[in-house]
Image 1: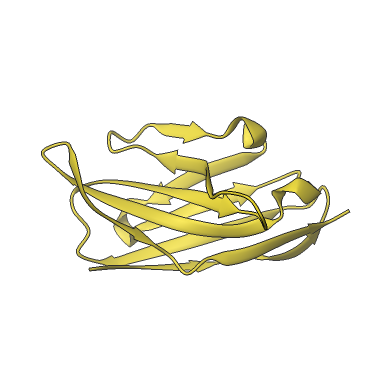
Image 2: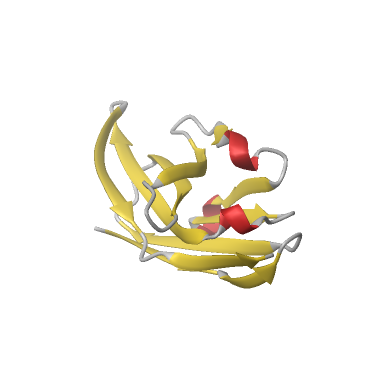
Length: 120
């Protein structure tokens, strides 16, 4: 089992910044993918930014140039720096981890979510 603990959400004005953290613990495989998703009311959960299993990053078009994902492997922690926030960024943000073995996803885990609210 893997536990993902998110922190850093909150209320911020448009144009402001927030930094989310996701600390992973438990049975983390050497090869894994970690990332951030978000879900706004009435919408499907969507990928915001993530590390693939080979370490490359990908971003949703809506956040490119504003959000930056980073990780501290020693701490098994992934961060999401969010700048120039917009009201449409308002959502619950979830951390996700997928363990891989032999390039095949074996299991996936979600954090409990952290609310980000951007006021106009």
